[in-house]
Length: 430
Image (tube, rainbow, N blue to C red; front, side, top):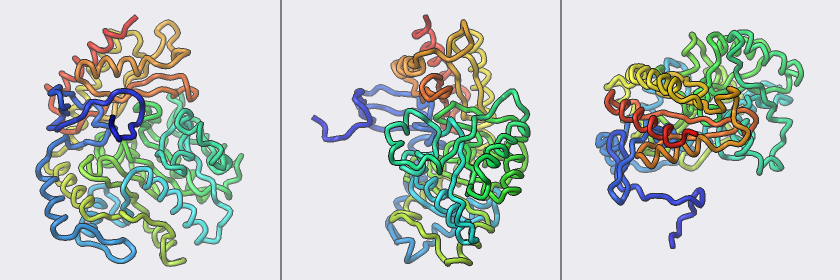
């Protein structure tokens, strides 16, 4: 008997080691990591340089508490990250995971308005579907029915209004105007922030609005005094072929950017947010402190991992590689769509790509979910890891498959990934 509390009753192979895009289990079987875990392992597995940087930092300074000290590595990383993201005056708030980063952004938005005397602003508008994290506040902000249903009695639903997901039949500007309508219905002086994933991940694989959406969202938020929070935990740090996915359609600067996953690429727990000068200064010139914190925030070893990962991303031009290999993978997915009618759509940006699955007879989602899980299981049997999901339509219906291999994947490995997916789709057809 194992003493591990597993995430589900399914059997779990034991991973023994990993290298590049491959994970090996203790039986010797290898798996191509076509989803980078949960779109985390952006630089691939087994990078000795990152391990060495972490070890060196552990020998020098393993831990200080953020209420008592900063550290050299945190100061350097915050500066490097701001430059990489082209947010030169923003401040980095470091935490250990995406859910913590989302919670931090929510609380920062609330405190920002309180410091300005607008204590009636408490609502956080998000979209349905969306996923912002597993902790209670982050889950309340999420529009992902199956994951939050059990916990809704613990949430004040009035604080978490939801906007409809991006509509591909509308221009980006028209689509964004629906936020204005919702703010007027809610009373804009009750809203603290609007938060969205520029390219949606787990809840509706690789869904993105049309160009112009985020720029208009930013304008509407400024007009109503609402903060614009871009949740880039999954889609940021080069994953979509740009440092920030919110800028794929043009120059947009949110008030707060939430980051995670690709920051340390799985080598250590690291996430955080970037806060604009206005948000930072309002808080610091008000009460003088952000009334929030975590024990391991800014952990030096995790930050050292992040700094080494950023070196690799820049030195190996992995943002550009995400565009090149992503174009190859998307072309292959389009070919699979032409071959398998259960693929209703292939879409995405960079190496955040998705397949929408459904009934070819109607062009709609199946009444009962499960196809994505079957395809993922068939792919796994063939040695390919993918990220299945459901509920994109109404919280239950709407199967999809999320794909996001390491940004370091080669052209030959993309072909191998497509071959595995081709076989899995054939195995589950009919």
